[in-house]
Image (cartoon, rainbow, N blue to C red):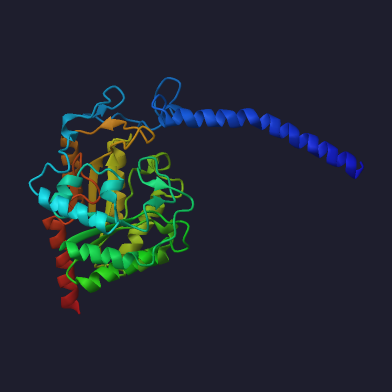
Length: 371
């Protein structure tokens, strides 16, 4: 075959492919518009023909309300407006400081229902490394991008100045995932903690850390930077990990992260959080709790998953308050040192609560005695 005939056939083949792709491209655009509208939601594409969900558990959890038949939030999930609290002055002060310092808080970005209560009590969770995540978990309201803005090298200093100016005794630092950096941002997080401690040595610091793609070296860098609580959220039971979290996250990877943090810094309190109401069973929750204890996790929180928007993962069940109380009791019986469990509890909910603060100080005292 001559080069000319070969080139001619290749051109014809390319033209044919382009023509055949055109309808698919139009269909893709139609689906995108459909998903963006209020009429169709992403969960409509992952339901079976009979209407059942791929997220439903193998056994129906007693006492829960099916969120599909009862889409309205139950009365126990009602919250007061942010400014409708006794400490409105404190809430306003924190809000103004956040605006002035141009800081991002997970309280606002994730639309946390407890923002008024926590800010009113002088507790806030700041979010560093930008407001755009490289991952796309189906439950999360944080913006996503494959290429977020570069890290601000001055952010650790600015964050430290803002936090210490608030006069807080306990602060939570969380961050987006930064898979675009080789170390996942671990050095940036560690520097932020050190800047805060250098300005206020008695400040108790909790870091809600990413999984750093399973890099234990980066986990250890953060665990050993001087923080008091190392938190990493498992989010849900093992069976639902792939349906709820980004494909780069994983059940075993998160457990190894928590175990490595505890192994590297035994004095640091380890903590995780679980969302309920996404289709998990009671036995799956119990197995998850056992796995966490086997990894040395000491603090766990349970809360009801609430859908940020119609583009996000649907709620499967409304979990009643008495079930949350049950998990609190079972968690304490399993040996967790502290369990926060309730419909509106979030990972950082009242993180500086008396018992957790006392636990951290107890560890600090023990370290000084050994030294």
